Image: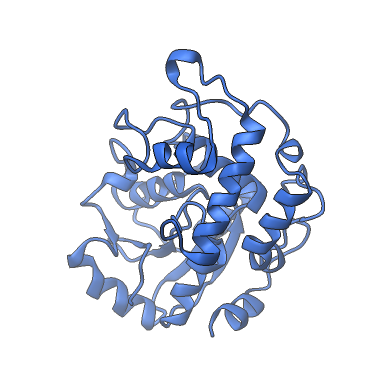
Amino acid sequence: MGFPGTWMTESESMVYRVVPKCACSSIGQIMFYSDHGHFFDGDIHDSTKGLHKWAQDDSQKLITSNVKSHKSYAFTCVRNPYGRILSSFFDKIAGIQRNGKRYRGNLVPKLVQNYGIEVGSPEDGFDFDQIASFRRFLLFARDTIRWRRPMEPDIHWSAMSGHVSTFIINGGRYNNIFFTEKFDEGMQSVLDGIETPVQIDLKKVPRFNESEGHGPKRAHKISEYFDDLSRHLVWEIYKKDFQLFQYDFDDPDNKMPIGEIDLDEVHAKLGD
């Protein structure tokens, strides 16, 4: 299986396991800058040079050797499951992608037909019932994760623990897992633990939110999207994420973690 979703600087100063919807654009750009002294011109997900990625065939041997020998500082970043699934909906389902099209071609029309989801359009100012459509999307997300139908679960809404675990199962070990909600503090803790070819000042790093501005803005506070059934579905899908990464299931509006991540517990419970 190897190390899908793993990025590594060319200098091998650090290794990062990407978790979608968890500041991955910013982290990738910081990694790129720390080697080259400038940011990648465009979406870092589109880069094919300057950063080792598992998806690039010529990077796989280098990444495998590094990770299995625990040669470099390895880390990842997680996010509150309530905020993450909402962000996935507004970006991937209701939003228009960078190429000007809907995500995954016919996915949104299928959701409209099969789950009664509405998403509006740029022409009508994305005017639709956000709460009703999100709750129907959540049913679809649960169906993909629990029963793998009507399609395999998408990386943007599959559980974070699943992404994090592949790195461990195949022989990697994390030095750090930090919170998107405490991004500067967490990313600084990574940089403090390594030597990079180029020094980087996080205060001067712009935010690289590649999905922003392509779709509707969230019109309500987070808790209004999650009724009792929705919260039941969220627990069914993301129970491990709440427990291992210390997020508050009882209060959807509390996006901050309520404890510290126990790395030994993460490795023990996700390493099976």
